[in-house]
Image (cartoon, rainbow, N blue to C red):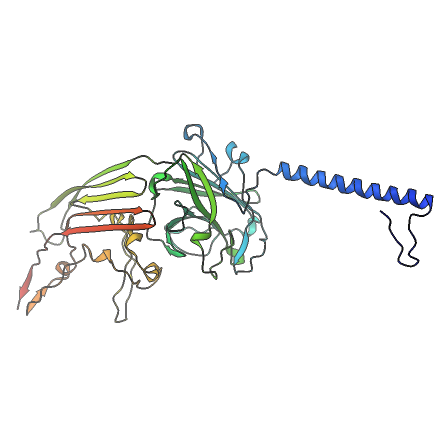
Amino acid sequence: MLYYCCTNKRPFASNPVQRFFACSIILLIAGVNSWAVQAQETLTSSSVTKIATDVTTTLVKKQHTEVDIKIDGLLDEAVWSTLPYMDDFVVIDPDTLVPTEYRTEAKLFYTEKGLYIGVHSEQPKATLISRLSSRDDFIPRDTVSVTLDPGGSGLYGYWFAVNLGGSLQDGTVLPERQYSSRWDGPWNGASAEVEGGYDTEFFIPWSMMTMPESANSTRNMGVYFSRSVAHKNERWAIPALPSTTNVFLSKLRKLRVEGVNPKQQFTFYPYASTTYNNLDDTDPDSYKAGFDVFWRPTTNLQLTATVNPDFGNVESDKVDVNLSSFETFFPEKRAFFLEGNEVFDATPRARRREGTPTTLVNTRRIGSAPIRPDIDDFELESVERNQPTELFGAAKVTGQNGKVRYGILTAFEEDTLLEGELD
């Protein structure tokens, strides 16, 4: 190849000395380029621990009996150092989609029992914000959350969050971004401050999630990671799906797992209780016994029943001073009605976190205080007006057939005896 000078158009390498220096320079440049290419190939071949962003990732599987992980928030077990990771977080709130200031590495693997997730979040110690709260409280603090679509088809999902300090949050999500925090699942998570930031661990059992039937041993799922950085008032995530877009659940990063087929689940939960009336000595003590049954015959069908249920073992409602003309709405907290309740929410307006949602099934009216009899001059004491309605029993079936999710709920109430005075 001849190089021409732009002034006289003569071959630059016409002189033997010039040809020697020109060839030497060309060979030197070619050698440097070859070394750079080889170095890049070596770097690429050694960086096998980074998860690709544009293909379905097959997760690493371990035997549950061989995994000895304590969910304490510390990624100090040997298995975490051998796993591939995701680190391409971007800023989604505000939705600039620029690379993040601090590095975040998310790792996943699974066993026949469930999914393990570990996240290392780099951040200066002086900027860490840790706040304790009750479950599902949304307050500014450093948080790592995961949204999981167990069916991989964008029809429904679950979200889990671990806040720095140990407080947990969880709930369900429907297309495309209908989040709810009313569901509480039996999973485990923890966080811990470490050198240069903090670590977060999750263990999510397969048995607690509704999963579609699989014709083979391969399942496709979707995953989304989000990190709240409180001192910057920002949220970072992968994939880049800010709230300003109209897609979310259908665009999660794709994962593939092999051999995940949760077995039949059956739980029998009996109880016994007694009540002492301290206001009325003439009212005898009452005794009560009953049980709940939870049966999951397949991965996409669950049957729940309760006989003579006890709904007293829930936290009390928050005190709400209502000076408006509208009825105060209190969220459902009873486990029987919360399990699979998202099937009965047919509109996005039913997913509101604050205020009164629009929903076809208000489960708080099942077993609520009885209606006052329409009798002239009939006066009731406050204790009589506010006593709850007893339930004989309730049953619920939820499941999925292809792209259709369905649910059936029935409950049986007992008549309430009200004692008052006629003026």
